[in-house]
Image (cartoon, one colour):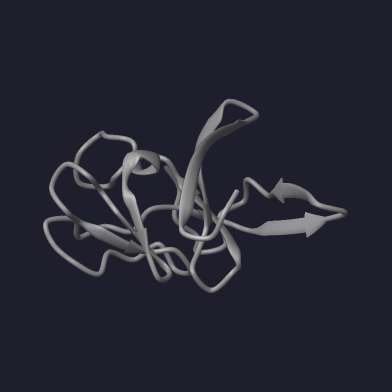
Amino acid sequence: MGKGTVRQVEVEGTEIALVHADDDNFYAVYDECSHAAVALSEGEVEGCTLECWLHGSRFDLRTGEPTGLPATEPVPVYPVEIRDGDVYIDLNPSNGVTK
């Protein structure tokens, strides 16, 4: 997965948008915009944000907070760990937001 890309993955029944951000870190957020029920994994990565393709809301991948309207509610952010080239995602949101 190259920098600036996003992929939809499923972990124990939870759909996740896994992002390899421009800062070379991996981030995982719940794969649904908090404004409209569409997949964030179909959006565009810019820096450490992910943009919803439908209405243009942008979410900070580190905090889940929206950085632009129309979304006003954050999305869950999940801790990511890379071990031996494998990606591990903890389903306990690091920002306390639940789906």
